[in-house]
Image (tube, rainbow, N blue to C red; front, top):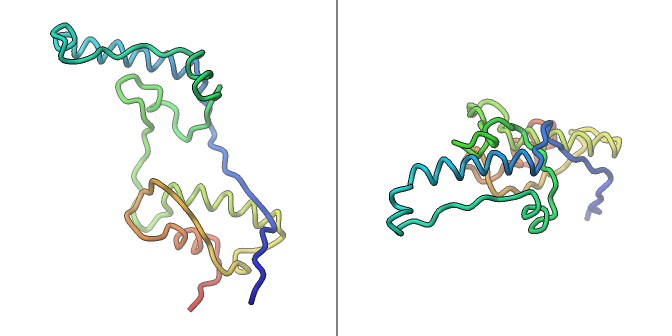
Length: 149
């Protein structure tokens, strides 16, 4: 029986930030665009108009003042409001696995360990680039972790 030990931790922090003021400005422009697009339906009463947001509302509802993001321009584009990520081929590390590998390398460094000293990689994710059963396999391979047979 082996003892399980957490001997190091790591965290990935995306390179960009979006403040509530930036988000509200883009979202409110999005509201204007959508309401203009559906003005006929709104006037006919078959569609509710979108309403503006505010910095105060976001901070009161969530406590968030800014968020870290990988890609800022798509999120702040009023016609889009979500990030632009380039799809990666299957022979490249997925974006989520890349993030996990960065944090794992920090943890390994903090623990004074190398990837080949790791027996298993556990990973939980709600949204993955690829439809496969375990992103942990990608992470394990990128770290050079031991593979049990």
